[in-house]
Image 1 (cartoon, helix red, strand yellow):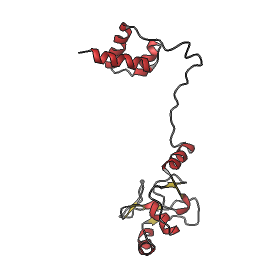
Image 2: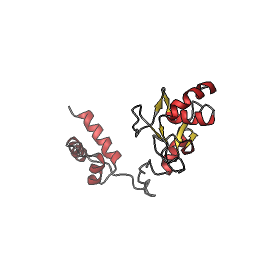
Image 3: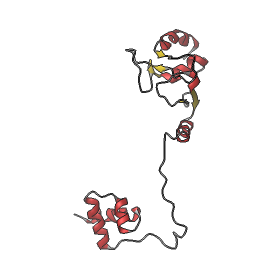
Image 4: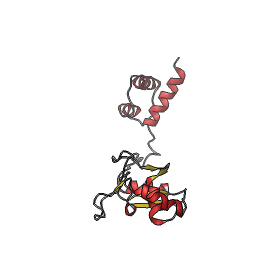
Length: 166
C-alpha cells in the first residue's frame, strides 16, 4: 500500500478495532467483524490480513511479502502494533515452540547397544497374527508392544501380508 492509500483507509480500518483499555499496554486491540462483534480468528480488511494492515498503517512501511506478522500476545484477532512483530515463517514457528503452543513428540532413543541387539524379527505365524490384529483395528504400536519388537518391524510385516493376502 502506498502512503495515500494508507491515509484513506486508516480511519476505516481503526473503526473496526476494539481498543479496550487503551492505557494498559497488555490489553489486546481486537479486530471486529463487520457487524461489530469480536472475532476469534485472524482478521481481514479489504482482502488483506488485518495484522499486516495494522503494522503498515502505524509504521508507514510495507511488510515484505516473504515475511509474516507474528503475535507477541498469541491472540489471533489482536491488531495492536506493540503486540506484533515481523518475522519469517520459521521465526513464527520457533516462537510457538518456545511458548509451548506447539509440542513435537520425541521419538524414543535407540539403546546404545542397538547395533548389537537389533529389533526382533517376526516369524511367519507372528506376522500373520500381527496382520489379523491390525485388521481388527489394533494400532501397530500396540501390536509391537505385545510382540516385543518395534513398530517398524510390525508395519513391514503388515505390509507384506497385505501384498500376499487376496
